[in-house]
Length: 69
Figure (cartoon, rainbow, N blue to C red):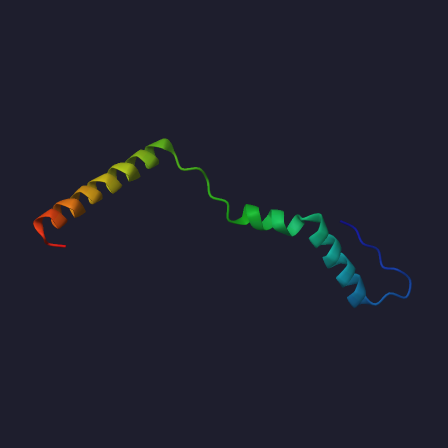
């Protein structure tokens, strides 16, 4: 993105025009989206976490049935 200084224009107004143009173009939104994007979880990791979750759920149900929770 290129912004040229107009004749007799102050530096602060140049920066203001630049910031406005960048916001309107959507560059900042795109960069913020990419910054924290997570990679997709592999099938093996999904399966392992599902098994772990299932075993923990069964343990909790068993303890509730026994009256320990």
